[in-house]
Length: 64
Image 1 (cartoon, rainbow, N blue to C red):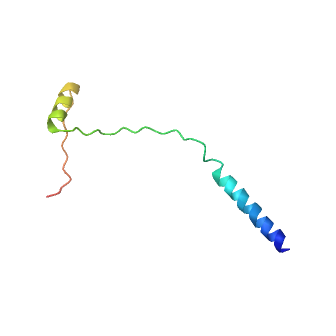
Image 2 (spheres, rainbow, N blue to C red):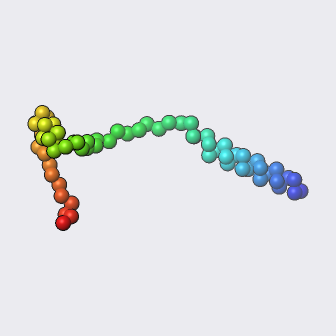
Image 3 (cartoon, rainbow, N blue to C red):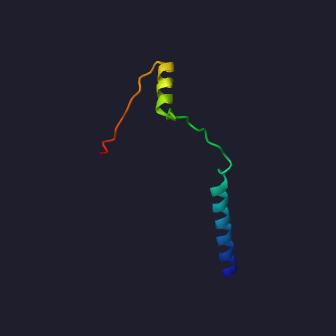
């Protein structure tokens, strides 16, 4: 009786392990989000904004 219970536990754990690792090899499509790339310096920001004909937006979080 005890051997049967141990065998069932091993079988159950094996099935759970196989189910958990079954999807591990699949890859998901990564969605690319629009991001902001920071300029390395103020001069680089001005040069890039002029080249792209875009305004420079300065935001302050309220730190004093």
